Length: 436
Image (cartoon, rainbow, N blue to C red):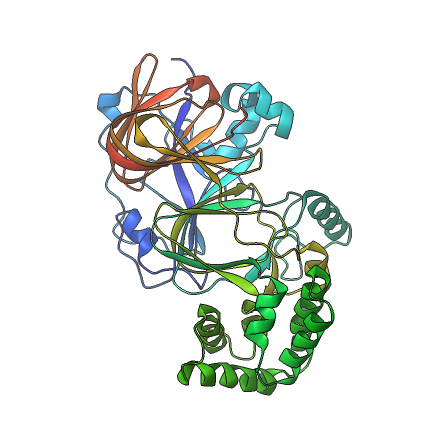
């Protein structure tokens, strides 16, 4: 029998505190246990690689998926997806699989650009409460930081570690439900308008920095003042500022969603100056199907919603607030971008079969998303991951049917499978390398 070029995936779940208790269990046809389930990782990152089972049987033998579990497994990062026989021949980590046969599964151009590894990580993300304010490092910062922490003996799972790997982490999110977030700094004049009239020492210092320098330099100075407030006891000062924001809302003097966002964040994270930082950031709302691209260095925070996210294969997160995890102000200030700009949206283009392509200004990843209604050709080759979000699709290659995928199931499609056709009625997302 010839080697398989398509593999069923069993993926990792991440039980972060901000996650939804229902969205990912519903996708997987499982009954939640009350714990938040924030992300499902589909890819080959060392901290949570998918497991891969080769599809070697004819369609008739694999077209009916096994029943999904009645409850989610009890682990912090656990496999997700249709259960498979643990003794299934050929099951292995997707990372190991790609290293063993890179040219066939990744394609020569991907191997030459990135080595024998998958350059992207796909996630299904479900946020029931705000994530931390954060930025992701640029490539040279990630390489240097990772090397320095390794040389210093900082353990990979240490809470004192800033860099989990040596990769940058640009990312793109496509909303599946109404999605709310903060992304990028506002114009200095708009920040000053939101800070005007607010009471409190820290916010007064922020305002003074921007009045003196209504530029990107002033934005950085105000940002640093807010972050540095956590070095002392800023709880009472922040409460005073939030009360003044709440007052102008109650008096009907505020028409900004930024004000309500700051109040809401202060309620969720009392005493955290990240609530003040939120006034400096663009408020973002995405309707289902809309998307945002976040380049390295762009400060952001997701607030709520369900989406699919694709990024360079990295877990590097530098946090600025709204979290109990490590905050390293010096490293974060070096990595953040302070140029005021609105959220950046990827380029959309029509794909065969009525699907939509999402292209960001990076080489590692792109997405296809939409409902297959009949037939849709996936013209892109290279390493692809397909996740079925609803319904059922049959993946067909040049020699006929390969596998059927239903809601919650996912597959890795190797480069040597060539172009494939999706047949059926279902909602899918496909991640791929655009220049493979």
